[in-house]
Image 1 (cartoon, rainbow, N blue to C red):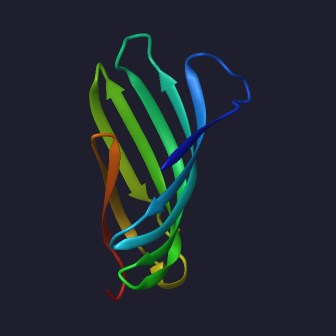
Image 2: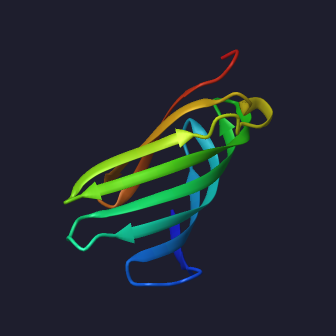
Image 3: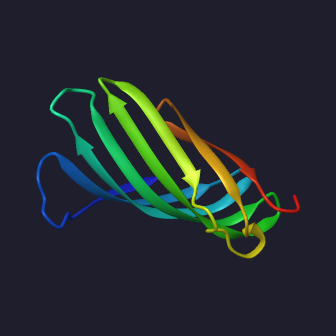
Amino acid sequence: MKVAPQTLASPDETRGRFSLDKQFRGDFTGTGQGEMLTAVGVVQGSAVYVAIERVSGTLHGRRGAFALHHTGIMNHGAQQLSITVVPDSGTEELEGIAGTMTITITDGKHSYDLDFTLPGA
């Protein structure tokens, strides 16, 4: 995964903007590109991010693309993360996909688990 800083329309030290570039391998093989906005609180360990990501590739032999919506919140270090497939964003053989994704970070390495449904699957 590559995360690269981008310029904000009105920069300040409490907010950030980043581009996302990912490669997926496993049950879903493909790529993801997106944008992430961040904000930090005045208390250490409190922050938020939102992101929109478009993923494209093959999921269990079905080719297509779909969008993901991320919301991550840290409240005094306690983390909440929600990643949802954007309704009606699936294309080609992934049309109608619905679901959620979880991210596990171990030793700085990201692993993704997509819990999904597809019509006719």
